[in-house]
Image (cartoon, rainbow, N blue to C red; front, top):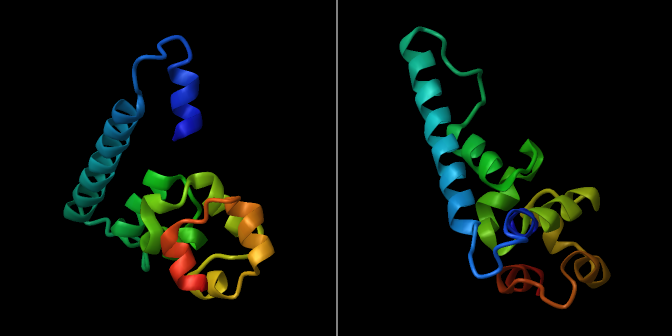
Length: 122
């Protein structure tokens, strides 16, 4: 989100685009919900195993399906880049995060490991 905002607002330093970007993301989620509902009404149910809450999370955070458990747990406490860094390191769920080394956490989060992550990793 920060990188997108920086690109959008490079010439308007006194303003913030985060609100506008979040509004667009919210509208996309609304449309996806509506399309899913219309499809069901028309006799085309979602594929087995598709959870609309998970789809909304993936849209909001821009992460692949396998990171849904982490996004459900940590939400905005972890950035998209950090989620993708965890995935690249083979960490896709809370149990994987619990077993992550302090070196790996430092590599992904730097000096600012989110408190919720610190609580889980000890």
